[in-house]
Image 1: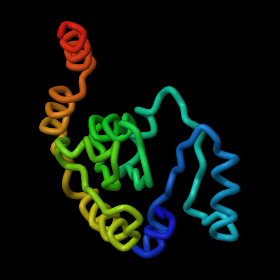
Image 2: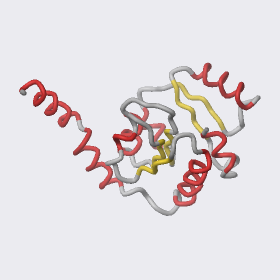
Image 3: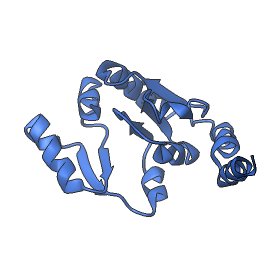
Image 4: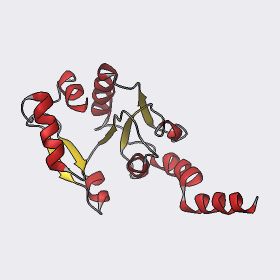
Length: 156
């Protein structure tokens, strides 16, 4: 979906899509099968422990998932100051209280393409309001909050 959206936005020569996965070889095969080749702007990267380095060198984080559990990577990316576009699916949609995430409908390539183009256009001018985003994430998703919720659960 992301590859098609970037093509529709005519950003192929302007951006690089890093597909971060535990299984880059499997992802390569899937992309080759769907697109008959791997587009020049797509690069497969093995998941690493230092994701901050990836976030630091990116302007946008895409999570156009069909289904998702809790979106740790979405939270990490938003906390790192990246613009985030995510699909409105169960699991991910519980993050709607995080400011500055752009939500798209499941499978809507046109919406994703428009959102990518808009964020690309804004990427050089406006920084995401990181303080507001971080405060919301810390309030709702911090480890301390989780611990308090678990203690409360067992205390009942």
